Amino acid sequence: MDSRPGNRDEIRDFLASRRAKISPEQAGLPTSARRRVPGLRREEVAVLAGVSTEWYTRLEKGHIAGVSDDVLDAVARTLQLNQDERTYLFDLARASRPAQQAPSRRRDVEIPPRVQWLLDSMTMSSAFVRNGRMDVVATNALALALHAPMFDSVTTRDRGRANIARYIFLDPGSEQFFVDWEAAGVATTALLRAEAGREPHDRALRELVGELSTLSADFRRQWAAHDVRIRHDGSKRLRHPDVGELELTYQSLDLPIAGRAVHDLTVYTAEPGTTAEERLKLLASWAATPAPAPERTPHHR
Image (cartoon, rainbow, N blue to C red; front, side, top):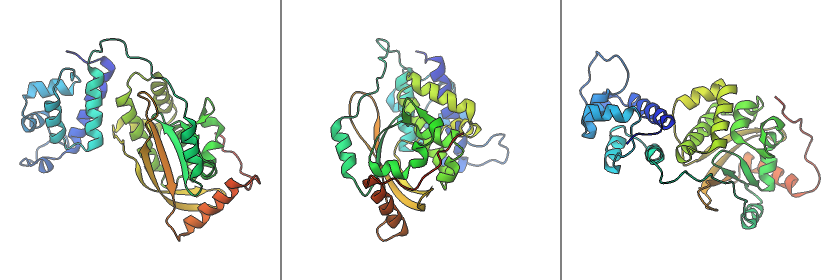
């Protein structure tokens, strides 16, 4: 069986990029000074995975439809894929298989009132829900206050929704808001890459990737790296225009709502007793009262 042409390109580029990252030493192979390219050769991957060189070469060219899970597992182990990368590889394989019928168009779903109640109950944490395309679809008051520069950025909104990827890559103000802007961009691109593996037929996602690729050289470079991220947590430093710099921890959780649509609940909190906690409490107090916070100048492109 053959894979769809666009899907073949994704498979080829992903496998080739992962192969280039594994050194002979990491794979337990003898080293040689005469290597023209970094990483493993195709024939070395084939031997380690227990398949023929011809077979692996065909696989790396994108012909993945019909390949068994056991073989994909062997390739994933040989390329030392992490869990997110392995999931992405299997998503690509699933998408390449001929469907019995045309895939249904994935619809955006309304966020149930119970989810908004949950967000509103979290008064000392910034909490929002995003979909797989990085659209922010629901927030609590503190999230609106903490991420005010993104929500004020009129040039990066889509159908009334703020989009995290558009803000990071298309609004110059994001480089001031995210202290570690490069890391924020890498993580966001990797999350979009994982979504593209899950939903290769999502027209809105393809249009978003096309827009970002056209308008942002940084996004093009990061997208070409084929890095994948599904689980998202850690620490982040934000430079807020009203309260200054905050170092926060964040945790993202899957939020099953309906159908195949992916939704993610992201919660930002501060370590107790820190300056960041004091500043987050100040933002929370502003968000809880009808009095406006100090005026901000919206970021325009």
